[in-house]
Length: 301
Length: 301
Image 1 (cartoon, each protein chain N blue to C red):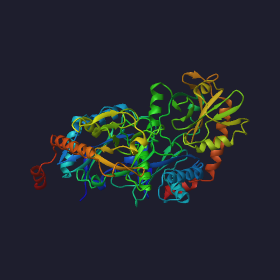
Image 2: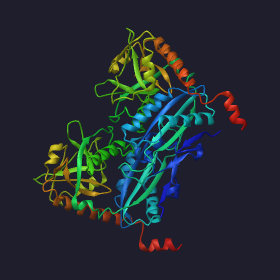
Image 3: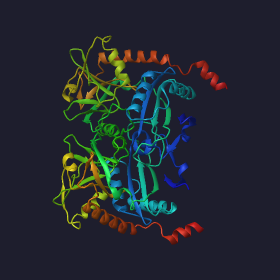
Image 4: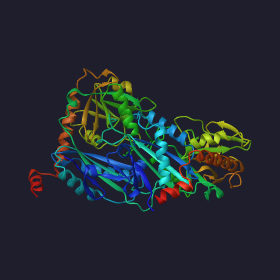
């Protein structure tokens, strides 16, 4: 069955979900996005994602348009229309449509697109084995803190991982320190129980799941160190993982062909994953879009 | 009257020229483009632009699809359908449409979009006065030699120029050397008749108009130096200009508020512009898409 996709005020079958070729999202990657986990029909961390969306728009000098309070009902409607219980919801906002010109348009309404993806985000089979990553140079622009759709460097990093037979890529700066994963934040745990992840700056995305993970450090009996860590440190870590809205906490068990400890997902990592998912489930419950009753009602209407 | 736009095999009125929101050009800026000047109904430097397009696609591991010989008839048809005598023709190729996933799709046809823009590219009023530029840090990715649609940093540079009351921005690297303009290559001419422009590397676009300009150096009695030049050198140059397919050679008469020489377009610059336009007109004549007779015929049909 075809998904329902939101495009500029309309809920459309996905095959009709189209935008103008003059949309600045298409011509200039002049657009930002968010991805939220959907659990039990509720949207996890919706407020945090919408706050970050607002920040991205502000950093790029978008005109004010929707506020978070206006997005949330649309997101809920879309989850409900698609009867989505578990998966992701994607939001993209572009600077709108005008004839091609590098200059920002003056009076153009932003375009808004939202769609869902059904997916087992909790029972992800990769968690059992962990994933393998390779390191690649970080060739992205200098404002990776803004969540733009300029994702080609990330796609190329992922393609390089695939070419090398790995699941994902971690990017490193010119000093050989890891910045982040292709579409996730990167972490190691040392033998002394220190959780190390790069400090916030323009070099990395300020992950919403990263915030959740960092809140859980004490509960997991770890000590936090926000600082750059090197490729060698990562390869020799006791545990390693990445975090994102679509994977929560994902164990990394091989880096550049080197097994991390015994090559199995680390116990601290799995503990953090469990805590993180529990927190997401709780958050999602407060932003419930579907209930069995409501879905049935919508169905019989 | 509405333009005719080419989208994936169809010639459509511009209001119907749409692509899927799942197109990777829209979601990931996973797309490349070219802009060719149209003069007298012919397409200038078509072969060089199509060769660069092929190179961009190859660098990004796109599957083979159209070859240059297949694009050219489509471009000509579009120019003819739009009765375009002078302006630009734009080509964008994306990796195609699939549900959102960073991994490159395996069996997806690239999307192809082409449209025209009517514009006085020869009698550009800015040439008389020259333009003002400001310098801004170059924050782009490290493969600026690939002509991707990841143009948000360029748009931001242009917006910063506008904010400062200037016409354009020249970008500089961490060493304070100019890389290139927001959407053009950058040049200075010294008092000793040296034409200085940054050498080719991954840091700049390998401009087709840059090739034309460099071919004309001797004819303009100048000596070429391909090397980095600093902001201070630019501010104190005898002449300055930028080059692009849409502006050919554009005199720059103010840099960061500093007048270049007497603040009027330089004589060498104007000579290069004349030579460059003549070369483009000659090139366009070999790729004629419209003739008065043909247009009249198309009209009466």
